[in-house]
Length: 289
Image 1 (cartoon, rainbow, N blue to C red):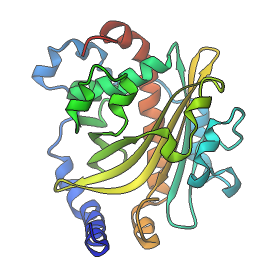
Image 2 (image 1 turned 180 degrees about the vertical axis):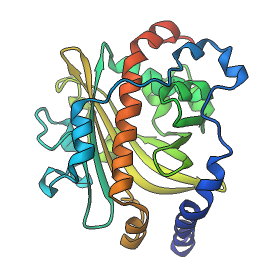
Image 3 (image 1 turned 120 degrees about the horizontal axis):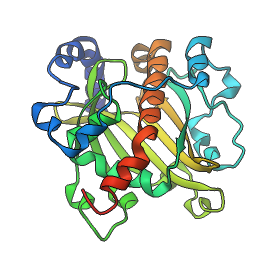
Image 4 (image 1 turned 135 degrees about the vertical axis):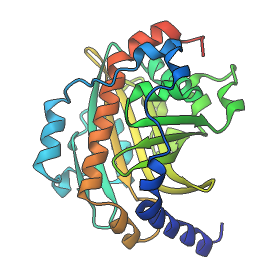
């Protein structure tokens, strides 16, 4: 797409966020439909969330991180190192107008196989997305079903180089996001060292906003699951607005409130998923869809 046309589309993002999101939000329903209530996954729909970890609550109320506690996107592969020293909880607006968010989540009893299976499996039905974060998740769709259905590929490869369209509310109203999974090597990770470093799963994502069928890419997201005494520990990192071309665009869209909302949503959805992932994997994985 020519640069000028791409810029005009990115301007449309701002207008969309300002004018259309509040209207379109009313058209979606996060609760289970009458049909979904009869589905076997419905018993996992639990709108009562456990209390967030104290570290998350502290990060939400204490204000932005110090600059030295921020992991720059250019150094994202540092998450691969054992003993990574940057802060695991917090947020900060950066000099280029982009926003940084860091969250850590415990996944007791979980394995890497469960993670890759979930990110493949949940994309087939809206109810599977809704049970992940009731009230904030609405609908989901896989872009390349042929790849997702390829039984010759492991779950990880069915998801990599594929896109899931997720309709959700992360604090800015209901939006349909394009969650495009890319191989970890694209972000600088070395998968040949994962096993030695205790890394069980890594998901690297380019995030876009869907407008009239067009994907406006705007942010980077990374999730790294490492073995822990009780299962896995997840480190999530977001660089919001990093893919937008202009500082003023990032400044207009992202604020401290936006970043706090993203931190809250990430902590909420992944702590909730961690609470039922081993159980739902035992019931539906790995061969059923």
